[in-house]
View 1 (cartoon, rainbow, N blue to C red):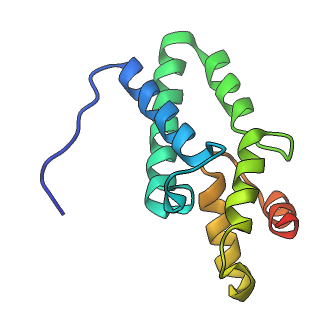
View 2: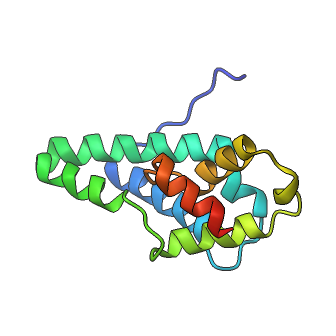
Length: 127
C-alpha cells in the first residue's frame, strides 16, 4: 500500500476516467483481456460512476441522477453486454469454474452496470 493519492481536479477529468475505463473494459478488440474481468477495475469503475452521479446530481438535480440510473441498467442489447459475453466465452477455464466463480467473474465483467440475480443467470447461461 502507498500513502500517495491521485487527485482529479474537476468533473471533466472524472468523466474522462470513466470513459477510458468503459472503453478499456468493453472495446470490441481488447489488447489486455485481464482488464475486463478485473475485480480491482470493477470496483474502481463503480466508485468513479458513483462520484459522477453525485457530482451531476448536485449540479443538475435529481433528474441527472435518474438519467444515470437508467444508463446503468444493462440488457442483452447493449454493446457492453455483448462484449462481456465475448470476454466470458474467451475464458478457457470457464467450464471448470463453480457457479459462484462464474457469477463473480460475470459481475466484474459487467461492472459498473447494475446486474441483479436474474440478469446474472441470463448472462451466465448465454455464455
